[in-house]
Length: 408
Image 1: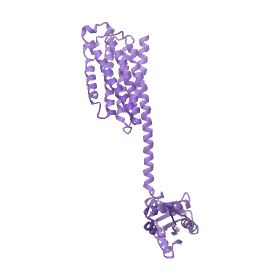
Image 2 (image 1 turned 135 degrees about the horizontal axis):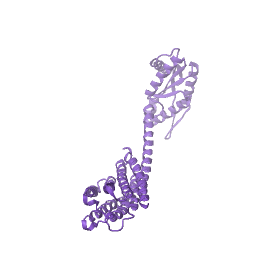
Image 3 (image 1 turned 180 degrees about the horizontal axis):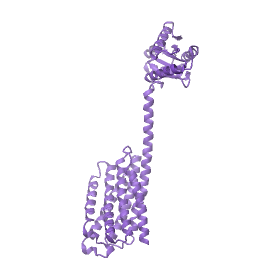
């Protein structure tokens, strides 16, 4: 019955470890240190396979061809799983750790090849004297390999944690160092029992500690990875939102840019033609803006532009569209207004621009604006025609003395 419970324990721990390892193997390439995370998943899968093979061997009582095959596979999987850890350390350390990362897989391959020899199946469970067969040292070599590879990994990663690294690397190092410590102790006990160094009645129960510890480490790594992935996705979304905003916004003023305005005006004209909805177009030009640049410099001019844009934006309703048309010119699409109402709104914007004072160093800068207004007819004129008429009205206001509103 105890063998049955041991087998069930190994199966449950190994199956859970396999599921966690598979999730680690499948992490996206965008995750920081994704190769190391996938390598940890591969090690988890190999150790889970070894645990399942040991569970099968225990459930069969160590007798028959199936039990022999299970014991072979468990030996191979454990050797390979232990050999992966120096490779993971190599991934975190960069140029260092090349020799162990190469030597461990080679040693694992040689010991795995030994598992397929006829002499391998002679073991303490059938009363065979391993020392007489001369293969006792192969099992001891297995223990030496797992202890050396895993001990090296745990030691190097422990040093990596002490010297100070970034948070992502620290999480990965800790997640690999802890199960590496388990691989230092448990496989030595199991291999020693297999070699007949000491009684192996509880070797399979001890072997279950490896998938159990690796399961906890894999869960921690998975949580760490998913957390980093969530942060990465959030940053990507933020970058996309910023890129989308920058593609339609003027960087200096925060208003919509000319390209967005052109499309918005075209859509507004089409909507007005279908639904007979009134709207108006205002073209605002700051008076004598060049003099500010020449006298106080371009940074002062930028400050005036930002202040004027903020004033125009505050004068707009939520469903109006304000944009920077170019240089010191702004344009506003006023929806749902007739000519009289649009002139009132334009006058309010002009007066607000005139009233504002921009502090720049010790200077107090003031500026005025001339506004050209065109109300859409029924049906409305094409977008290009409305812009031309608003521009002409604005220039008429300039010729008449500036700082005024003219209808086009």
